[in-house]
Image (cartoon, rainbow, N blue to C red; front, side, top):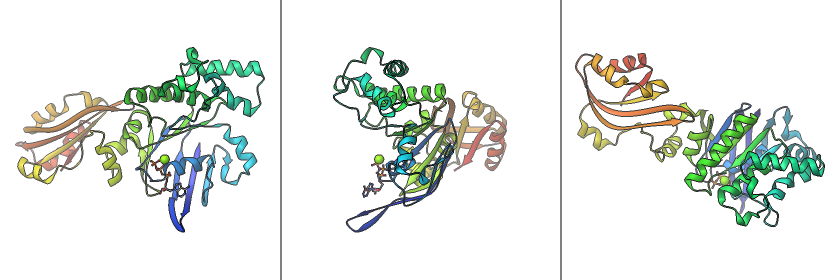
Length: 336
Ligand SMILES: Nc1ncnc2c1ncn2[C@@H]1O[C@H](COP(=O)(O)OP(=O)(O)OP(=O)(O)O)[C@@H](O)[C@H]1O
Ligand SMILES: [Mg+2]
């Protein structure tokens, strides 16, 4: 659906060149929810603004569907952008217009529907985001979550094939964030809409996204399926972003290693094995004595996963044989 090739963008600031994007390449399949994560200043907003050419890259190519946007004129872009929805961190609603009139605005700009058709479409959109009862209010009379629902309804007005979200939940509290993420998941399912969202919050990636790219200093340093990247992060930036989510980390601090005094296993359970007594089964087979150090059970999108750190003494097998034994039970085992 979206193909980005070798996208590069520099800014000049007081005569200094700042590299915001360096040869970024991405492939985003139709119907997926694709997350882009990175620290502040990594280039996330620049990248998402290059996807609809609000920002002109210095070089590289952006294609959405069959449209090579980087070869388009400004006029052609204006047309195409009507079917690329965008949701903003601070909502960007028109203060003097009611909720319904905000949602109607892009329909008026597109000029394809008559008044009655626009009203009907607005009703449909307000129902989709659950705001029918608020249509006559102005933005100042809404909560943050409600404002973002208006922003989402407005972005969907012209039936886009792509929805771009720039930190759509960063201004919201955790509970409201959950409800907006659920709405986006719903929209993705119902409309088979491709969603690209940028965030600095790993929780958003974990709850909502199918695929993720990690951006650092304008470069993609890691990308893949969320379940793979979250459970086996390769890059230091990914690992430090993950450390904030409470997932078990790969390494134990040196002082703990010495005090534990046995080999330590990191066990990763994905899907059904996360809910089965695998450790007990293998423990009996291999004569393990287990010292549980840390653990978590959670889910990535709808897939359950668990991670455990455990010190072990094995009386019936060599510790080096344990990864294969756990693998037979569908569990990844690393000896740290
Ligand atoms: N208009 C501009 N002029 C000069 N430099 C800019 C401009 N816009 C962005 N930059 C620089 O480009 C880099 C990437 O900025 P960008 O806004 O894309 O980061 P970001 O990942 O979205 O950060 P945040 O999480 O804080 O929103 C930063 O170093 C920033 O200072
Ligand atoms: Mg930004």
